[in-house]
Length: 588
Ligand code: GTP
Ligand code: SPV
Ligand code: MN
Image 1 (cartoon, rainbow, N blue to C red):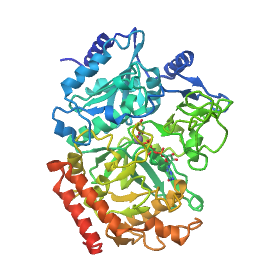
Image 2: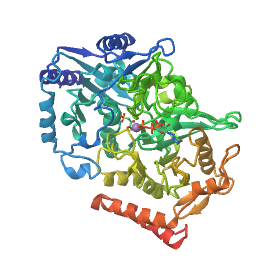
Image 3: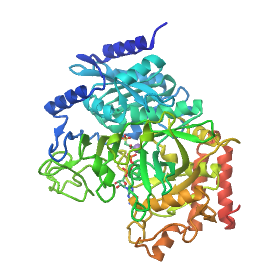
Image 4: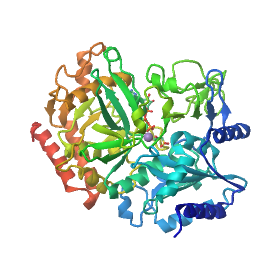
């Protein structure tokens, strides 16, 4: 019998034969190794030293200007049967896909080092955690993987004990957008990525493993791998409720996960605990509740818009030991981005004069990589092997119009419909056009590793007699008024909406039934101290029946586009809400 170590060794050897690196380095995850990599990158220009007095241990990486975000049209999910990938994924026959990408890998590491990066997604001792090994020729990827995952020796030991791991092969290649693929083979627990060094395309533990491969595993094993933050909300009595929230890329997960309660919440004893900002693995416990872990160990967060006012916790953790990608710099080499609210940029994200009219100084998808343990609101429960129990699931998108600030699903099936019918304006996190409204079910459109019809059926299947499922809410921080400005102040003030959710969970708020769901009754949403007039409040919660009927019709067509894979139960729920709107009767 071959041991796991043998099979890992064999795979590394085979890969080295294909890619022909000059050297092979097995990563142990040590600090010394990290510093050696950083020094090497400082020497060859992959990293630029930032101001070490103001930002010790901080570095800047400028990516290739044609490699600044995920590329959805080149991201493939290669099941043997196309139907299993579904209309939500780009697909290629697995044999054809391997042949295509292996041709690109041929000899691609000549002159370079092949790094073997063992990693664990989730606490090393957690039964919910899963391991993988990424082979890459990018020291930038290795350095980021060390921050973003439990990387190195302990992960490798778990892999040797456990026997199975996800294989990810990555090469930066020539960074030619015409020779770029991010391919997934869920049945083979394999990922192959070529031609990009950026974020979700290259840090294979993140979107590729923890979402696309894991969602497929979760489907067959009875759990959920989701694009969700996890946040603990502690009330003045000291009780902590955990909420998981799915917002599409660049729609507010990092911010909500580490918000600071505004006054008088803070003085009254409210506190926020950050468990995760991007990915959540949830599994039903023996008590019938969903228990969640954050498989990551760091944040790869959006820089623009992050300021001492909007996200003070982020600013606090970014003062040391962080890697910045595609931000601008001030004259004295401090990181800078639009919305930072202090300093002035001297050089833009490409190193050009920041004031020469080339558009934003920081790239709109510029990011920071930082260890989660540096976040002042970081929760010790992040290390809990069994995870944290989830009291509410929140779906949300970026919608200028139509969608109220908050509403609640009447039951699990309605909640699954709210998730399945989510839509949001696209952002700079992917290379496609920005600002176009598209359906992004559960914020998983770019990340679900199988057919959405089967995925919704899987979600519905959690509704069992003995389950204690979380309540489901929908939020929209991004509704705009006639003058084009946001109606809701957002950020820390979102605490008020979280508090209403907790009151619904504990039965202290009645809410008001509407055809689309339950909204706060008069006075239930605490608005004290907010400069919000009655007109704005009405606009935030307005439900336009004609526009909602149109929305439900669109949702119906969307569900139908999945043919027989779409569960009848979800279509029936869409019809129920349509009837409720037609009759103007929430009870329909
Ligand atoms: P990914 O890392 O791409 O998955 O993004 P994310 O969902 O974590 O988004 P993030 O919290 O980084 O926010 C993205 C952008 O939305 C930033 O520019 C934020 O400043 C902005 N944003 C976040 N929360 C709010 C809010 O409550 N109101 C408004 N108006 N903007 C917000
Ligand atoms: C996202 O796009 O949702 C991200 C950034 O979190 S990336 O890691 O590039 O996917
Ligand atoms: Mn994300």
